[in-house]
Image (cartoon, rainbow, N blue to C red; front, top):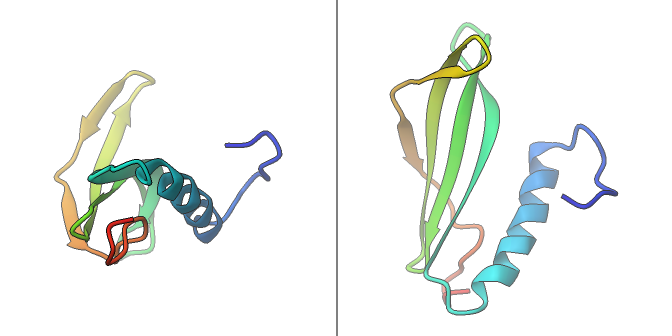
Length: 98
């Protein structure tokens, strides 16, 4: 992130920034791209749980969001939960491949 980036950016602000950066990167004949973030996802009861969110796209275009919930036991031990995935809209690739 640029040093001038503000603290506590929203998800939309982060997605807009990284979409622009990744679009620049894929302009050189790239066929797939992904991004990941350490996020918090809501449970049905409203509690937030830590999750690694991976956004994966291919030049076809197809896109998928994969969430890996996790728990921490101390500062070093991380236990990954069962991932879930959903098809989503492509943000980096469009119908013409870039």
